[in-house]
Amino acid sequence: MTLSDISSVTGPLATVVAALVVVLAAFRTHSAKVWREEAEAQKARAERLETDLNEIKERLTRIEAENKRLIELLTALDPARVRTQRF
Image (spheres, rainbow, N blue to C red):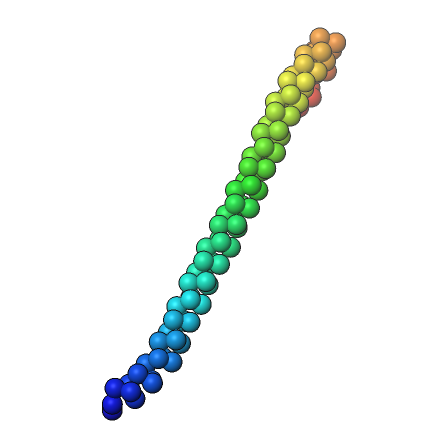
């Protein structure tokens, strides 16, 4: 094989290898972008759920306080009847 034969083979081969490297780099970059976007979406969802959970806890605390007050009022009206009820 002469030098010109080798260069005629390596030129197209180098082009194919370079194209493959560029395609793989683009794929990895795109994959990283997709995963980053997915992570950001999941983080936003988690924050919304945390906000909802805190709101539910606050509501429950208020409801428990109101129920306690209602039981106090019922007990003041008829303590015997309240004792027979299950709360």
